[in-house]
Length: 184
Image 1: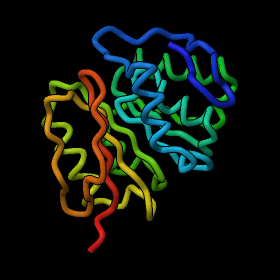
Image 2: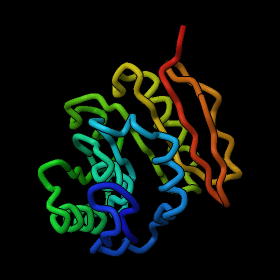
Image 3: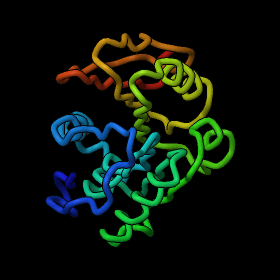
Image 4: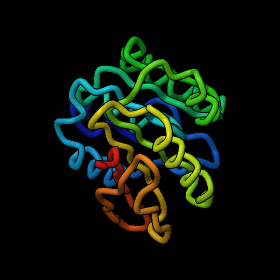
């Protein structure tokens, strides 16, 4: 795996994904950041179910101010820390080894401009739970966006209290669905 563009573009990530994780492909990562465009610059970025941290590191490389990485796996968190150290970006990243719900229940001290969630594709229950949590909470800055990566076959909800689905992009067996705060 490598960083695609920006400050760390072309650099290889040092740590390998822990067993049982499905890393986001380079092509889908590139698509994600092409869609997000300039809104990544100076953003506060959340990479949840982070694996080796490739999404959050890509955000830092493309100009995000800071990134928070959340994953339950000790191996994944060690990989993220190793990658941040190798890129000399540890001062711009925070790694939390815990479940996303626990992180949202008090360990995250700020709102995010962009939140990216990539639970295991087979766990559709986590998608709905997390989208509802973001809709009910104040985890996004005004104008912020929640992005979920999921399997192509899963139909992401059109909206939940507080969030509206604004875009879905399908690529191969994967899809990216974008949510913004509801306009009421």
